[in-house]
Image (cartoon, rainbow, N blue to C red):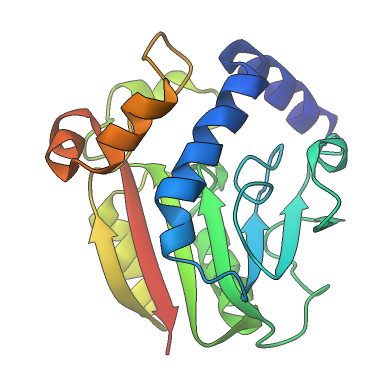
Length: 218
């Protein structure tokens, strides 16, 4: 668990926590807040330093992560639990409207563990609840994907959608190419540029290397 803290500090420190938070403010205000109602209950699975859950509009917010440093970065309206993603027993059955996760599934050891995560998410989601997954698409990031020591499970938009379907979800939307692969470079992250990028899906086809998949609990 201390390794998780060390990895986060080094990797996110290189990116710049303020920069990441600023980018996610725009992503939430210009994109994700349009897909999540402010009266819903949202869980951020592997919430990291809270870039998403701190900035999304929701009535009730939950975060779960193994990193012991996570709570000190979360806003006061976020209820945090330190746990593995396969154990969401701190939440009752069918109690959450949306489960969101970003850049997490690739850190799972294998498909069996991924199936356990899907089952845990499905249990806590309400009927019709959404599981929104953002992550690196091995189909387009097959080289740089392996540049991170803790990447184990390669997934494409197709394999993820198939796995979710097998686990009892219904696929609502698949965006094969959404965001660029990483912020850990010199790519401009000006607020105006991000807003323009989000309004131009044609740009996603050239710069996007992360999928965005939304699945519904049937």
